[in-house]
Length: 499
Image (tube, rainbow, N blue to C red; front, side):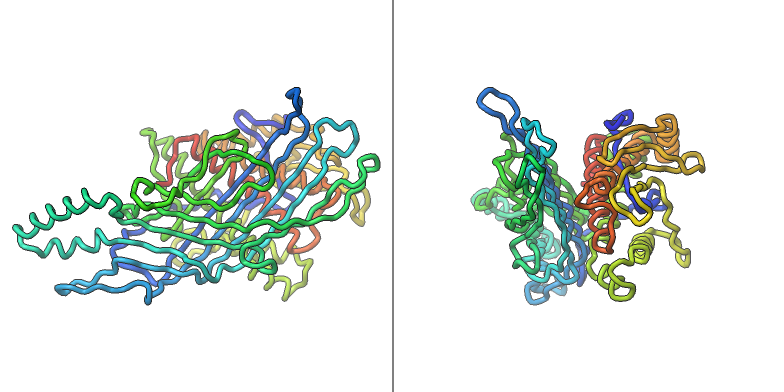
C-alpha cells in the first residue's frame, strides 16, 4: 500500500484527529448595501514545489522540494476617515469603504528539502529547513471596497425620465472614451514576516550535510523575504467576496516568491498585471483561497445531480472545519495563555483548549451545547525504552465498526511494513456511506494524508515525539495543512465552486 486508496490514500496524528465532520451548515451574507464596522477575513495561500535537476546526459542529479503555507484570519475594522459618506436628496451612501487590520493573525509554515539522487551513501539529504510562526498583522493598506456604480444608482432613480435617458447616454459615451473606467470592485493587500526579523523577512532553522561519509550535519539557518498577498476582484452582486485560484508556475531555483497577486480586472487601462505568472516547467503549484465578509464557505455546484451537490456541500463543510482548526493552532494568544497557566509542556491542556475553541464554532441551536470532539484516525509512536528515546515503530489507527484498530504499521525509518487492508476498506466504506461516495472518500484520504505527515515527524531523528505546546502546534499545523491541500485539490476536481 502506501500510495492511494481507490483514488488517493494517505494521512496521520499522535493526538486524536477531531471528528469535525458533522453538524455544519453554510450561510451567505447580504450584499454590501450597508457597511459593517468590522469584517471577517480569512486567507489561505500555499506554494509547493518539486524540481529535479539533471546533468548533461539527462540523468537525475538532485531534487529540490518543499512547501510554504500562509494562513491569515481574523477581522478588519472600518476606517471612517478613509470612508466618506455622501448625502444627496435624503440618501446617504458610502461609495468607498476602507478597512484596516485590527484583530488579524498570520501563521506561516515552511519546509524545504534538498536530496542528492546520485549519491550511494546513507545520507542523501543534503539540506533541510523547517519552521513555523505566528504574528499579528497590525498595519498595511488593508481592504478597500469601491462601490461607485451602485452608489450612484439611488441618484439615477430619482431623476425624471428625460434626464435619466440623457444621463445614460452621457455615461455610455464617457465609458466608451475612458476604457479604464473601473467597475465596483474590492482590493486587499496584506504582508508580513517574522516579528523579530522585521515585517518583511522570515527566518527558518535547518541542517546541512557536513560530512557525507559519516552523515554528520551542522545547524544552519536562512532568511528570506516575507509574504505579500494582493487581491483585486470585481465586487459580486451578492457581496460575498469569496473565491480561489489554482495555478502552476516556473521553478527557477531557491525559494519560490510569495508575492502573490491575482485580479480579474486586468483589461482596464492603467491596471498592473495582478495575474500570477504561469507556465514554465510547472514545478511550482500555487493555491489561493479567500473568504472576506463571510464566515462559512458558500457552495455552488456545476453538476445538476442532487447527490453531487450534497457531496460538494459536505466537502466544503470539512474544508471550513479544517480552516478553523488551523486558525486555532495558529493562534499565538491561545498558546501563550496555556503555557502561562500550565507550563510549556502542557500538551493535554493545550489540546483541550484547541478542541473547545473549534467546537464552539460549530453551528447549533440556541442553548445547545457544542458537540464533543471525536477521534477518527490517530497515530501512535513506540519508543525503544519506557522513558522515551528513538521511535522504533508507529501505527496509524482508526475506529472501524466501533472497534479501535491498527490500520497501518511503519518502522523506525517511516517505511510502511504492514497493514490491515480489509479494515481500511471497511472504514473507507463507512465514510462513503455517511458522507457520500466522493466526499467520504476524499475526506478519508485527506485524513490519511494528515496522519502520514505525523508518521514522518515521529520517525525523524531530529524531531521525534512532540514535547512542548509549541511542538504540538507545529506538528498539527503541518498535518492539517496537508489535509487542507488535499481537500482543496479534490474540491476543484469534483467540479465544486466557492464563487
